[in-house]
Structures are given as C-alpha cells and as structure tokens.
Image (cartoon, rainbow, N blue to C red; front, side):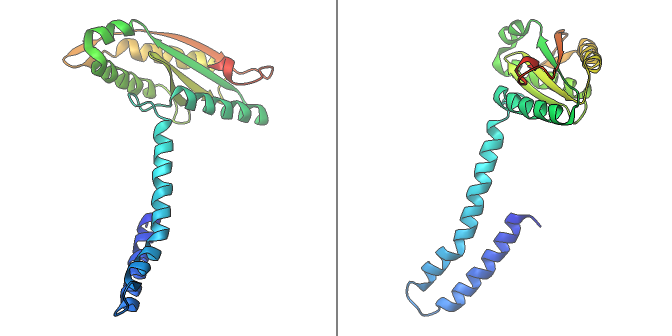
Length: 196
C-alpha cells in the first residue's frame, strides 16, 4: 500500500470520527474536516513538488536528463570516482545533419526522430549509464567505472547501431550517422566539466 493510499484511509477514519463527534454542534463539522485534511494537504503538496522537480530535470522532447541535470549528475559521479578511486568516462554523440532532418520534417518529426535515437542509444549502454541532452543534437553519456578503452568500445558500438538502424520519421526511414567523442576523468581535473 502506498503512502498516499494509507493517508487516504487514515483520512477516511478521521472524517468518520469528526462526523460522529460533530453531530448536533454547529461549526464543529467544518473545523473537524479542516483538521482532518491538513496531513493530506501537506502530503499532496510534497508529492506535487517532487513531481515538478523531477520533470524539470528531464528534457521534454526525449525524456533524458537536461543539460543542467546532466552536469549535476557528472559532478556527483566525478566525486564518487575520486572518492573510491574508480574510473569515469563519457561519450558524446552528435547527430550529423540534424538541422536538415528538422527542416525537412518539422519540430514534431525531429522530436520523434530524437526519441528513436535515444531508444537506439539505450540498446548499446548499461542501465547504470547516465544519458543527457547536452545540446540540440548532442547527447552525452556518463559511463561510471569505465576506462577510456571501454568508452571507445561504447562509442563504436553506438555508431554501429545507429548506422545500421534506419530511424522512422512518419512514413520515411532516415539513415543517419553520428559523430562520437570520448573522454575520461583524470584525478588532476578539478571537476567534471572537461568530461562533458
């Protein structure tokens, strides 16, 4: 049972108590209901605030992290890599000729295209890897506990997947290529910025 379901059940119990106690007393019912609703109101406010915060971290077109959320994740992963002396690499993917795709198929078609690119991308990475949109047609993938050679392999795998998989936009299957860049964090770096 979720927290919200439990609170609704508790609210029902409190309302039944208020209704029983308020029988025959003017104003008692309204005051009792208001008091009974206070915990639910606070829970709903927290839930809505959490949902808004989560949505602000996701790119609306692709549902991957926004640039700011990606930078925050990179700082967290960089700190973890330094603390535990682990590898941290990144792959950046630029979609070649994306502006032509957007011009030919419009903004909605371009968004559909990007969503399919992300699905293709996810076929070539691990669940623990972190994907974010760095720019209009550039995505970065943080690869925790991955050395530079592993990042090169991931980049090659993604380039192969995307080259071999035409991407449908409406009725048209678009073949496309990507440019790939790889990097790894260095203990001499002062932050995760150079990685992205």
